[in-house]
Amino acid sequence: MLIPAIDLKDGAVVQLVQGERLAIRDDDINKWVTRFARFPKVQVIDLDAAMGTGDNLAIVRRIAGQLTCRVGGGVRTIERAQDILAAGATAVIAGSALFKNGQPDLVFAAQLAEAVGPERLIAAVDSKGGQVVVNGWKTALPITAVEAVLALEPFCSEFLYTYVDAEGLMQGTNIPAILEVRRATSRRVTAAGGITTKEEIDTLHANQVDSVVGMAVYTGTLSIDDLG
Image (cartoon, one colour):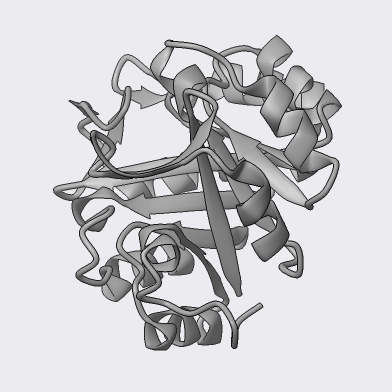
């Protein structure tokens, strides 16, 4: 399944290369909401909240009123997670806050799962150079994605695995790395990071992995007319 991505920054839809360089900005959010309306799931990330530079919760509320979406960005507290769900999201995505002192923070993971329900919690595990990365992909931890998934599995219903090495580069993703994570857990797995072609989406789907796609859709490299 293809899950379109809506990344929000400064009140607009954006696409970043490697999480840093702005490649696309579109102030017409409604255009993309309309285009993605037929998809059963859409992923919304509040980049301002993730970077600690702002908050797009009002826009999230508007999008969630029209689309079935999972939402992440800046989920560092139970209150933030509850605010996102109250805005209409079907699930909340937590990432960096699930790690502490270089390891999975099982105490916070348990608290968050208890507060919102594991069925509404998606754990984001981002990997670069074979290691989990947090804090906007700037801090590498001494653990692998598989180790993180094994530790966090009891607290969530799904994992969002991002292969950061390929993020935004439009050069394809790392299927073997994604499937290694798939094999490590009984939870649902969604992959992101460089997914560019229908063939990649089909391969992942055949292995029970959903695909979050951003740059390839926004540039028109991947047509969504035959997908979803």
